[in-house]
Image (cartoon, rainbow, N blue to C red; front, side, top):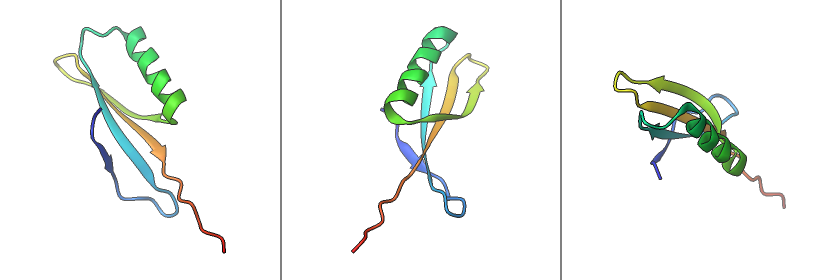
Length: 72
């Protein structure tokens, strides 16, 4: 599983980011299925897609960080 990093939050919203890389021999349909599975299971949404000169797909996913507020 790739490392998860955090970027500076926008006012009132915090996002968690995850980078995923797929080799060039994965078809578009396979990549789509894998990303749909991550979206449905983990709540991730697509942030950025880059296709390198070598054909690798570098994809950044994001999801909101929801902080629980204590009520006393």
